[in-house]
Image 1: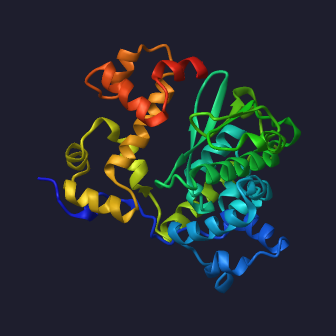
Image 2: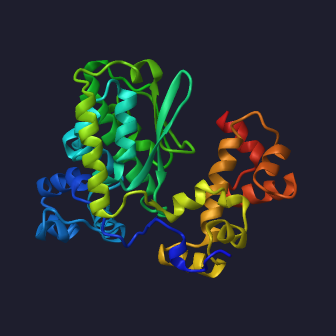
Image 3: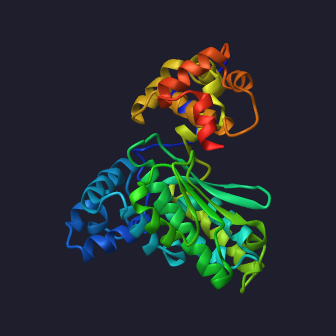
Length: 338
């Protein structure tokens, strides 16, 4: 019989866990000092202790305050200030890889060491592959802001690893203002699509496979061991957030009871966990279903097939739901995006 303890869904990374170091806020703090903002009030724990780690909830308060000072484009200036040295221990392991693909894989494996506040994920494709920024926690207010910041940090690291040979093919962003389109393209150095269904950067596979200048297997092994030890010390080794856990289990196709059974807990315990994380099962599944529906509408699948894949009883139910989500029909959306 499955345990009905909240702890049975393990291991989980919570919005209340103090695991985020100063690395991801370095660019923002530098801007705050230059602009004479009240930098000490953004992340007071770092002022008191340079080695401190803070929770997502603590970070969120500081990020919203900084965004109030600097506006929506602050994520661009913040991301542009960060580079490989800001990534901590994992930078050594990335620099010693044979090519950019291996360096990115290493960085993504240990991204929590650098305090990644989104889930960066590699998506293989032909002739282009992508690094996408997925929400680590359910936070509509900051998810696109953090995605742009972290993707630009990733691009800066790749530029340092590859030099002049690195070039992005394209960037796709969801929530940025079209008024900053030119600035975004300048920062990323390639064409940028605004209003996309996900936040990601596309890189030609031939660039990913170009050799780096200082490959060293021994250094990689030592760095990997050091990174694993650091993750264990911080307490995040093998942990992922509840949102990423639900997404990986296809929560949009399951009821809360079915999902709880799959995770070995009770529906009540799962709902309590979600409340603690500031969300609900309905909210999570609706957001996942919306994103998946938009992606499927960009394929050649029929509306009936999409409705079936999303778990609707018929296409009519799907059309009503999509209209409620986006204020347009699936057919209208498909016509605009394809």
